[in-house]
Amino acid sequence: MRKKIEMVLERIRACGAEYGDIRIIDTIKESITTEDQMVADIIDSRSKGVGIRVILDGSLGFAATQDLSNLAETVERAIQIAQAGRMLQKEKIVLSAKEIVQDEYQTPIEIDPFTISKEDKINLLLRAEKAMREAAKLSRTTGSMVFQRQDKIYADTEGSYIVQRLYESGAGIEAVVNSETDSQIRSYPNSSGGNHATAGYEFVESLKLVENAPRIAIEAERLINAEQCPSGHYDLIIDSSQMALQIHESIGHATELDRIFGSEAAYAGMSFLLPGTINDNFKYGSEFVTVVADATIPKGLGSFGYDDDGVKAQKTVLIDKGMLKNYQTSRDTASKIGQLSNGTNRADGWSNIPIVRMTNINLLPGSFELDELIKGIDDGFYLCTNKSWSIDDKRLNFQFSCEIAHEIKNGKLTGKIYKNPIYTGITPKFWGSCDGVGNEKHWILYGVPNCGKGQPGQVAHVGHGSAPARFRNVKVGVEDVK
Image 1 (cartoon, one colour):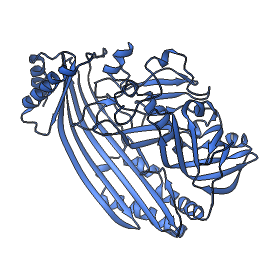
Image 2: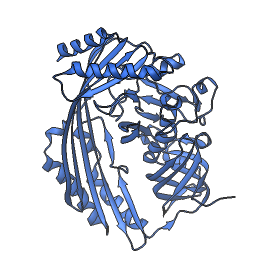
Image 3: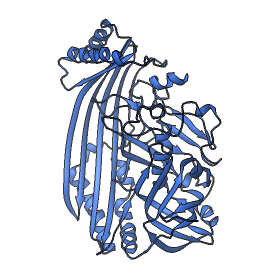
Image 4: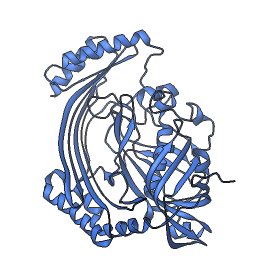
């Protein structure tokens, strides 16, 4: 295979291109879904193909194929696309410098998930469903598991040759209660399919689905008869799982440099940030807010060895004690602001072109115990687990709803819960209201396997770590508050 790859790269050079790369990707995936203590779906899939990217006279061309026997034709198509692109070229693509590497990387795992039988996986989900059913009167229960192994070979005309094997594992359960007029849900360990990591089957075991099943079942049953969450301005503590989505939508996407330059304007939107904002001492949040893009953290769903530019995974401070410091960049976007890429250029499989994607965008832990955060609130709520979200195309105005709100009065959880809590905000103002973040003991890393971006659309697997965090005077509910 390496000899064939070298022939492809030589052909790219012979066509006069100043740069070219090839990615060969082989992905196998297994997903299992149960519903109401029966198997609902079992899906096994495999996708293997090649993506070839060239830059010719500053113009980009990309072509892909599943036919590995005639890659010369794919090179020719990429060259033709680059030539056609020159007719509409407004500026030449320039790549920032990078280290030339010959390397291999594999996700550290303890148990290969593909060595565990489907029977064992199904039995675990059914036992979790049974535990939910025994704890409460439920209308519906579900469970799911997803596993992936991806083998990647990357090589470019600059001399890099990188081989990677990346594993992913994840699982989750849900309890639903319906009435004639309402439906309520509780999810564990997170909504939208649970939690996912670059890890082996040991990660699924660590989630303890069966042990946590009774709690979420009981909470779902209680929610159906709970009061609607009040509207007003309240102090909030937001749990780690909801913080993951808050970070994703209002920091992760907002700091993608291709979006800032307008590359996503026609589809996924732009950003309220500008290319030069990092030089303007811009205050993104309070002194308690330090956020990093970290593709090196163990088990992060956005962790890997090298991105699809062949740039080594790294940790970059995006926000330092509230002050904006960096963006997420690729080689072609970083060069526009005079920087080196920080390794966030990734494609969804072999058939798509790499674009700037989040890695693991993490809010670093603070020094607070959860009890200390709660004690600092006279009248407010502890919100848990995302239910829905909405944010504008500049990543500025947002609205999120959660599955459950726990009442806080006079520095204590009262035990009362509310359903359908909604909070809204404006990104810098909201992050500026943060006055405490939980410590490492409460810090949890969540995987998001369904991040959409690009046109045509691509799905990225990213991660977000956070502890519960406290925010002051946040608008809760949908009514106008004077």
